[in-house]
Amino acid sequence: MSDTITNPLDDLATDPFEVARQAAEQLAEKTGVTKHDIALTLGSGWGKAADLIGETTATIPATEIIGFSAPALAGHVGTLRSILLPNGKRALVIGARTHYYEGHGVRRVVHSVRTAAAAGVETMILTNGAGGIKETWKPGTPVLISDHINLTADSPLEGATFIDLTDLYSARLRGIAKQIDPSLDEGVYTQFRGPHYETPAEVQMAKTIGGHIVGMSTALEAIAARQAGMEILGMSLITNLAAGIQKTPLSHQEVIEAGREAESVIGALLAKIVGAL
Image (cartoon, rainbow, N blue to C red):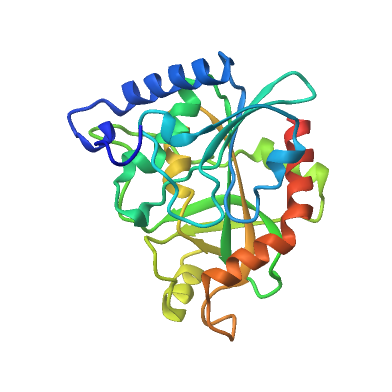
């Protein structure tokens, strides 16, 4: 299914969880894998990890699966990969992230997470490229997400659905990551709506309210993952310092270049973390 056909998630009368169930069935049919254990959404700079964590047994265009959209952002490959890990577990690598700023609605933003849950995934790893507020972070620094601030003024939860987010980003999984690399720092991720970069004043606002990382993804996906009962590990690649802290203009090309320069290092790090789960 492609965006030339009406996406069923755009119909508010449609149950998004039923679409996710259908997507998981199609995924199982096309990959030959009935259950996946771990899912990874690989943001800018993180794609190399998919080549390092195990043996890829199936790669399919995400648009062949119901509810998925073609990626609008360079750096996202638009595929779903089934990978056999050395320990016998199965990983689903999501290279088709739908961003909130694309205007497709929150259901499509979190559809990949809900599909992963319907496919049996219990551990969700969410990664992104983002701006750093801490001046000690240099471009290419991987950072664990300890919490988030959602400034989209939106939620994937519908109706009277109340989900506790107290320990949204798993302390247990962050502990495993720090065993692999004790130098890993952590911080609070702040999701803005995008697609414009934040102003210096907005960055200072994020800092004032407790943010350390600024970006345009992840928080809404994490909420949906928690609703689905998954354990969540979040990681940001600091591709640049945020506006007003970095003294040069921000650009998407800068994000891509920083990700390309860091991808071998952070890919290997993430592969080690996945191997320890």
